[in-house]
Amino acid sequence: MKQLVRNVKIIGTGSYVPETIYTNEYLETIISTNAKWIEENLGIKERHIASPNQATSDLAAEAGLEAIKNSGLNIDDIDLIIVATTTPDRIAPSTAAIVQDKIKAYNAVAFDIAAVCSGFLYSMSIASQFIAAGVYDNVLIIGADTFSRITDWKSRDAVFFGDGAGAAVLSHGNVNEGFLALRLYTDGRGKWNFTVPAGGSEIPASHETIDNGSHYFQMNGRAVYETGTEVLPKAINQVLNDTGLTIDDIDYMIPHQPSVGILKKTAEIIGLPWEKVMTNMDKYANTSGGTIPILLDEVNKAGKLKRGDTLLFAAVGSGWTYGAAILKWS
Ligand SMILES: CC(C)(COP(=O)(O)OP(=O)(O)OC[C@H]1O[C@@H](n2cnc3c(N)ncnc32)[C@H](O)[C@@H]1OP(=O)(O)O)[C@@H](O)C(=O)NCCC(=O)NCCS
Image (tube, rainbow, N blue to C red; front, side):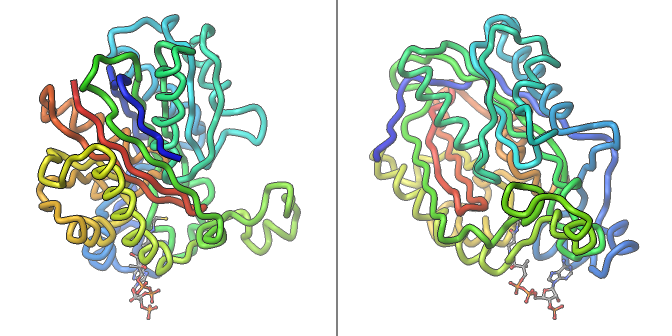
């Protein structure tokens, strides 16, 4: 289905990463890996890790409060909170309900969505439909994850992820500003290429699941690379087609941060100069739902974005889930 959403814009951004940093050199001391290899192949130098008393909702609440402040709205103006996360505080209730209470946004309906690394892009689309339809005026969307809690710290795959949260407030816009196109895709045939097997209804937590480590994430890195470099260009070309824009019209790409290799290959395929591709995986690694909003907040607060700039968002994640969006900054 074509998902063209108009007149919904971003009016505030925020982000939060925990204080503790695990450098590549530190990881060398706990697992069999190589700091130089991580930096050269993945583009990562370090990642932030939540402290034992921090859950995903704590990171999400900090980012959310900052985004509301940046938007100029009051807490009570928020009609809806969507939290995109793969690492909820608990199976029940939703992390969004916990965040609603932590930031005291009691006028807001709140729910989580699960689309792993594409979660923030999915949230942008869901929020846009509510605003475009006139159901809600101001929506706080948050991408927040603490993958350190589902990481096997004895496995070399522990190098890929970090913890963090980013947020944006979406609201009404005028014609020719805000989202010009937004496309989401799902392909469940790829569902086991990134998965956390145990702890759900299929394989409930047990002594056995703890013993065999099936409560940790499992990733097929090669499949992620091959799929990412195939579907990101596909989604991007589709939103360019939807808008009648060309790749030369894009001022900045603000993508999910899986690995520098996937992004470089994608930029090459779509013909976007690498200088226009924003990255911050060197500092934060892959924060899953957090990547796009943390990066957007950094680029925004650095004063890079001018009114009328054309931004390209794109993400790929477990599911497979993927998509892209084009937004006129205002
Ligand atoms: C991870 C990735 C670089 C691995 O490359 P690959 O050629 O597909 O996979 P291989 O497992 O055969 O690894 C090749 C070599 O890379 C090196 N390597 C792989 N993972 C490593 C790690 N964590 N630390 C150090 N070296 C590593 C090793 O030298 C390995 O050779 P070995 O198996 O003989 O030790 C690549 O698949 C990739 O970039 N995938 C994307 C993953 C991603 O973005 N995940 C996050 C989003 S879900």
